[in-house]
Amino acid sequence: MIPEDVRRFVLTSIPSVPFLEALLIFHGKPDASLSVPEIARALYLQPPTAADLLKELCLAGLLTVCEPRNDAYRYAPIDANLARLVDRLASAYSDDLIGITNLIHGASRKAAQSFADAFKIRKG
Image 1 (cartoon, helix red, strand yellow):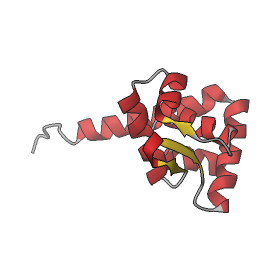
Image 2 (tube, rainbow, N blue to C red):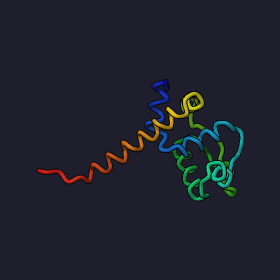
Image 3 (cartoon, rainbow, N blue to C red):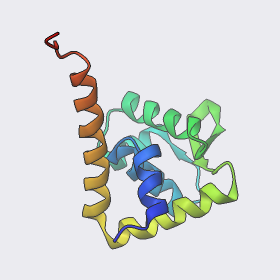
Image 4 (tube, rainbow, N blue to C red):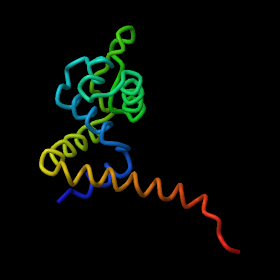
């Protein structure tokens, strides 16, 4: 059972499994400075894709750039409430990896379907 606050956070703030996995890498190493190439290797992504992902995490208030010249980032939630929520998410993910990933994929499918529905021709 995924706690309701974690479920809400996933549905509103976690757009993809790679986003979540990158977040959890940083969460697991809160004092570490990690570079784009390191995250790209860890997640089997191309560096430009990893760079975009890390920028998204910064915009979400979860990471900060700590070494601009080296494209390095570190875990830095913007407030204690967000940090606690990520702690709870990490715990829920370790307990129910499939449930969390299904939740993310389900939200993605719903968004894609809503987008597709906007282009359906309606009979008047």
